[in-house]
Image 1: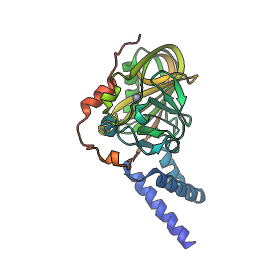
Image 2 (image 1 turned 180 degrees about the vertical axis):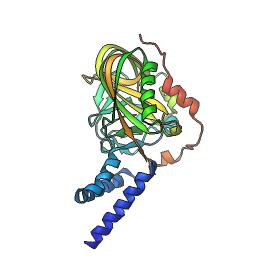
Image 3 (image 1 turned 90 degrees about the vertical axis):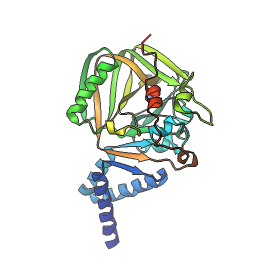
Image 4 (image 1 turned 30 degrees about the vertical axis):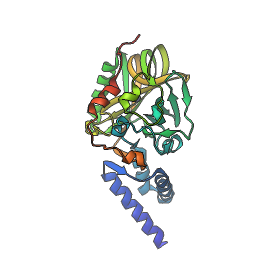
Length: 301
Ligand SMILES: [Zn+2]
């Protein structure tokens, strides 16, 4: 019993420490992580109120695989599977091995919007080189009306983020009918992988849809996230019938309520393979990243 109490206190301290650190980088493999989470879950079960806080802390964490810098330099492989990623969140966005399409995670399911415009349910064994997920809670509701374009959409969201704290993370979800929406996907590449910008050349496809029902999943990262993720907003879309989707370039909206899930904890899973360690991740890729994120003809057809 004494050993158990000691263990409990040890875990309690670990959680208290983790809660104090706003950003934590965990360079351990996911299997260990899942075992740690399972142990924590067992302890939380027996501990009632104290560890309920720890469970909440986990729910309020954003979990990210690798970093934008590694994706920009051509890290399109990886070690984490789709199934493992879904253990860390039920909502999110990302991409797949070989940059094979745009990821939309919602309601605990992962959808893959492919370059040819189809959407598939991602097999659990698919490798994920870059993604961000969270367990979604409706912390803030923002009713929206007469949104003419993405700039207006972001402006309304930015005002809400300013009120609620611009240096936190937000996952957002909007279920609505979009009068018009323009989104992009891309065909995958084969190894040896080029850089992100090279991989996107000639591989991108754009789709415009009118009066389409579906779900927008988005992520807001604070300005200090510079090379780890995209500061500001990043939105993906999947239609209600799960047949169309991609990375949103433009949109309009008559009416809808977007929900924001605020997170004050960030967990980064650092891949531990030879390829990942071969990159100089301090290299300035900002021009490439800007071009990859915003590369579009910019007009809805
Ligand atoms: Zn995207």
